[in-house]
Length: 359
Ligand SMILES: Cc1cc2nc3c(=O)[nH]c(=O)nc-3n(C[C@H](O)[C@H](O)[C@H](O)COP(=O)(O)O)c2cc1C
Image (tube, rainbow, N blue to C red; front, side):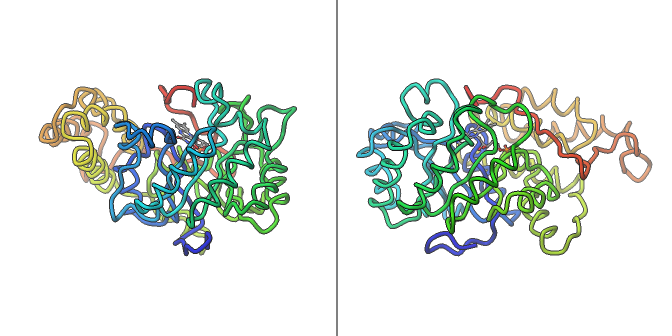
């Protein structure tokens, strides 16, 4: 897939999940392969210009974290344009503008999904950023504020006219939050309005089959995957293979899942330091454990993790506990095997238990 001057490995993008898709997670996705683009979580343009620690931490990257979109939010065109310029200087490949965040503290300032109610402002902001940088500028949005203001198609058309390189649309309104099903017809309307500008569909894609359904039902140029990737970081590879061949790859083995869990922790420690990385990993590990089969003991032990060296001892204790569910070859007994999401019934994807405020 092409995005402005960039040739992307695929049309499957990692969606931003604040608090989850930080640099360590993006790196494991890159290592597994298949994702065409990854995006940082939303960063306040003003905080970035003020050099605030939190904002600088959010844009942390690594030569292997490429290509990278940095997502900005704000309402001041000057600030957004200047922040975009500085990000481009620091090597951001793509500037993404957030017009979808439903969090009240973001919408109150007129940014995030509040921009879906103010087309003129939204287009002005995008145009200023497009003119400030050479990098492609993308916009992430929802279908509208609520069912009465279904503004995404019209906004997408206007964004294409001022030079946006692509739009990612989550197929729900702000009012819907994460409830109900993603509206594929709504995404289709955005695709049709956007003309030749690529539109990526987003929402509830947790299997390769769901990605194909999204593409077929909406005509979108690609798919952006958030929670489905956090449950299953192999989803990009699996989906690419499925789209090319119609065949599903076998699921990763338990050993491979353990390896990836440990790798994720190592990267958390490298990026955030041992203590903080371990504390942050406590909320991440249960997502990996969803693929382990019985994992109550793992979750219990990992909820107290404070150091990397302790992790191997936790695994050892967990493996001993897990033996009660396995046969003599170490395979999980059939009734304990984690089930793969079924096809064709679309699976609603649960939101994390304690999501980032407002998401
Ligand atoms: C915990 C959490 C944090 C999120 N953070 C962001 C964010 O920083 N920027 C953004 O544009 N969308 C954010 N989103 C929305 C996702 O990118 C995505 O649009 C939404 O989760 C639907 O896609 P999915 O079903 O593939 O997860 C967040 C969603 C969740 C659940």
